[in-house]
Image 1 (tube, one colour):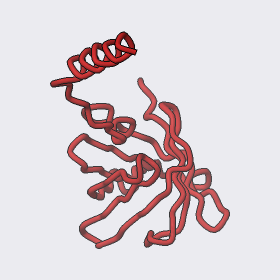
Image 2 (cartoon, one colour):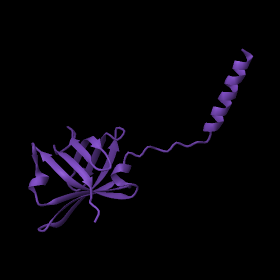
Image 3 (cartoon, helix red, strand yellow):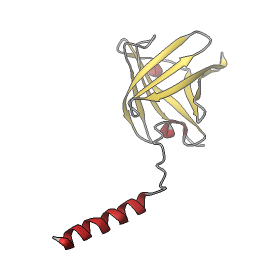
Length: 143
């Protein structure tokens, strides 16, 4: 009996000393989107009312996310050259939701993150979103 109590005290002492002063790093769910600095994603699919407009359109759409919580939505084609909309983004619900808030138009795109990997992110708008659509983002191809 005395040995088991001594054993428990020693183990408790070792465990408490091993964890004292250890700081836990906050889990950054934004890391996939910005990669520690900024990362550019190409929109490979924009589905609205069952139609994929990314396939029908000659315009290319891009998102650029940075680590400050800002993102930029760019549309590029030969006629418009570049149209850039800036927004703030926030990842919530342990990486399951993203809210993109465009300041100029006071427009909010609120998505559930259906799937995410280093190669593809699938976003489906929810009821809080001003626009009902789904987006598929792929990393901008390296040249």
